[in-house]
Structure formats: structure tokens, C-alpha cells
Image (cartoon, rainbow, N blue to C red; front, side):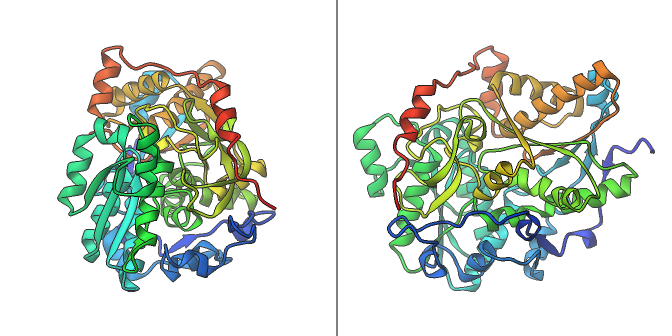
Length: 454
């Protein structure tokens, strides 16, 4: 191999199709259920929230779905994204491992989120939607949807988890610059938010609460629909452009397939976007990577949740999803990785995890910030707190390679930059970032509220 650091592709190499892993799995995932009947939901159940094309994608049995030219034209603003060989990090760690990261921080919103925000806005605009509502944790998804709505002339209304609304004021400003209105969640604008505030006036909020508020408003207005930044199948589908590009970049670099693929997980979209195309290769016998999800110890849905049907939101407005969950009543502590503070996990990823096709670990935030600082001092890019979880696992593996002499190829997704997270870094550098041991009784209490049906 040459000493190439950045592996880039021409705009003509932007993937023209999204990859749907469902046809390649040993068995299909369980369907969403109607909470009233316990029966699988149909298109008519989802139509008040989503345009028909996204509903079609959600349940599609096709292996590939074509990407419209109009979406490719917007993707050209940042895609293809670079694949970096982290040579300076390798040197700093003294490891024989080859470390690669797929960097999504060059998008207008500074993360991977526009990969799905643009298609969602496009399909809604094509079907006559006037306004989109959504939730956001750290603000990456809210800013991505605000950007996408600006491209297609849609109004955008965002409910931002209160803890992040206070921690990240410049994310709010970015959304407002693109024309969005932003509310702290819980808010008094919805019955769901008002009820939470009546019971808990100082609530830090959660993604589950913010989803309830955004869904409530969308369902009440005929010209308004809801957009989700992670969790659902069509969202994960749109993110597979990441892994498809990475496969081509590994071939262009003359590198063998990864031995380990690592991604952070909150709802699961950036992790899925990176590893699903590689999983296709693994299932076909063309590669055999270990695939590892990394979640925060403060919100460990994979490692300490249970696999069960649960609501995707706190108020119970959504269909029941079979997923790894801590319970829809679970309110995560306000750790700085706001994008990973979700009580549940993507049903598709939960199903794949149950099939034993990848593993999961949980990390404390001090270890993650330490890894982010190590990475930034070597590679120069300041990671968002979310991908710092994946970086912590990569650095851990690279140190094992140093001990054993194994020349493994490691791949991770650096799904966003941390330029809006300076308060968190300021606190970490001052020694003011705590770890948090989540008591089992809090999980047990939230799981006691799982819906009973059938």
C-alpha cells in the first residue's frame, strides 16, 4: 500500500441505490403492531405520519431501491465522503493495526443525518406536505432536517430534548438559520409535554417525550407530517450510502476487508449505514468482520434492555415496535452524547442482534471523551460525543493489537464533528465530566410499564 491518508471518490461514484438488508437475513424481523388490536400495522395506519413512498420503503422486500436524481443532486454537496487511514493515531498508539474512519462531518449539518433528511423532505414535498415536525436529541438530526426542508421549501418544527436545548444553544441557532422553529421538550405546546411538566416541572426531557410531542402535532394537521432521524427501516436504508462508499474506498486503497467494524448506537442509523453493506458481504461469504455496537452506559438498550414490543415514544402514540428497550418511560440521565439518549433501539438492528450477527458493549463517558481527545490530538478532527464511543472501542482494540502484534484492519464511522459540543469538552478538560452507574432498579421500574396486549 501507498502512504495515502485520505481515500476519496468522484461525485460520479455516489451510490445510485440504497441497500435493504431484509431479503438477505435468515428470517424477517417482526412487524410493528397496532397497540389497540395487536395486529400488524398497515399503510393506512402510518399514512397520517409518513408519505406513501416512505411507507413503501419501510416495508419493502426489494434488496435495492433506486435513489432519485433530485436527491443525488443534493447529496453532491457533501457526498461521497472521505475514508481516512488514521496513520497519526496508529503512530500515537504504537499499534500495528490499520485504523480507518469514514468521516460524515463534512455535510452541511456536520453529521451523517442529512443522508436521510434529504430523502424524507423530498418525498414529503413531492406528496404535498407543507410542514414537517420532528424531535432531536443533540441537535444533529434537527439541524439536518431544517437544512433539508430549506432545500424543498417546507416548514420545519423541532422539539429539542431540554437537556440538549440548554447544553447546545448554537445548534438551535443553526436550525433557526435554516428557517426551523425550535421548542424545548417537554413543552406546553402539546398535551404530552404539558402532562410531563405537570408531573415533573424540572424534567430534562428525553427523545421519547420529544417524539410524542412531534407526533401529536403532525397527527392533528392534514398538511403536516412527521420525520424521524433514526430507528425505522427507511431511515437505516438511506444511510447505507455510507457503507457502499466505504466498500469502494477499501478496494481503491488496495486494503483487505475490515477485521472489525465499530459504530456508536443510539437509535442505530449511523451504525447501520456503515455496517449493513459489509454484512451483505459477510452473509455472502466474501468477508468475515466482527461487528461491534457501542452504546453509553447511561442508556444501554442493547446490553441491559430486553427484547420486547414497546412504544417508540413516551406517550404511547406510536405503533408497538419489537426492539431492545429500557422501557418507554425510561428517562436517561443528561450525558453529553445527546444523540444516544434513546430508550429503544432500531427494530431491524435489534432483530439482527438477536440473530447473533453483531455484538454490543457499553462505555462510560469519561473513557469516551479521553478517546476523543486522543483522536483529536493525533488526527486533528474534533469528534462529536456520540462517535467518541466508537473511537473508545477502536482504541481499546488497537491497544490489544499492540500487545498481540496482530495487524488487524479496523473500521469505524466518525459520524459527526464536535464543534457544537465545546461546553462538553470544556467540562471534560476541567475534570468535571462524571461517569454514571445506572441502577438496575431504574431499568426495572421503566420496564414494568411495558405495554400488555394479546
